[in-house]
Figure 1 (cartoon, helix red, strand yellow):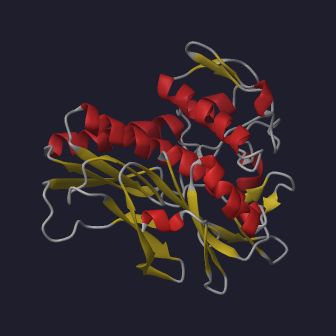
Figure 2 (tube, rainbow, N blue to C red):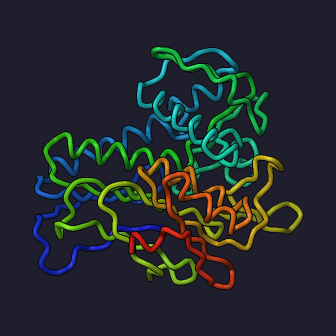
Length: 313
């Protein structure tokens, strides 16, 4: 994982309980403050339910049903409608840098689950990348995608799942909660030390170490990386899972990781993509206008931060 919760320092005032599971191909760790195991485990159960609803690898998920619908409306869970609204907002927020309709390109190298290769992405013959987000229709309990448009929950699904898990825990009496879902973290409420949650940013060159630690009272932290989810192309080259929506190919960049702090895990996740597509100085100046802060690390190991990053250290 590229972003992780860090244990509270000695002298913490709250009693923290943690539990973990696997969902969406990632380790999900839930920490709750002044709440019992049932609350933490309930949040994990929610994460597994979201996995069942949103996985592109499951034939019975809402996402697969929508992707195969060929333009016809499909009844979906309200949480799936929420996910798709987050996708549409993220696309607008980033000027199209974030685009969840690139699945037909992604499956060229990443069709099957890395954890269970027997689970594979199903796409209709009409699938194309990019798709048409302007034609997405969300009803009271149905969603319709334009024919040929398919969706990949990807990172924003993990960010939103972390947000929902934190909300679940607080609604059930936890004084504080932190959800760590792969490279996405969401936190709210009282931290174990009574001050702020401490979030470690993984060093892309030394995955067991942190290159920085940030402090967060409430919000989300997300890290995207070009170093994970890579595959060899037919031409003998290498590709990764961060796709440029304008070329439908892996983004050519020397940026290794981008970490964003924002008001929620889903929002933070959506803002990372632009860090690989825009000139770095422009990107880091733009983030504060979005209520966010960011840190980018290059292939040479140089760390470049937005002007407001130090606020969280």
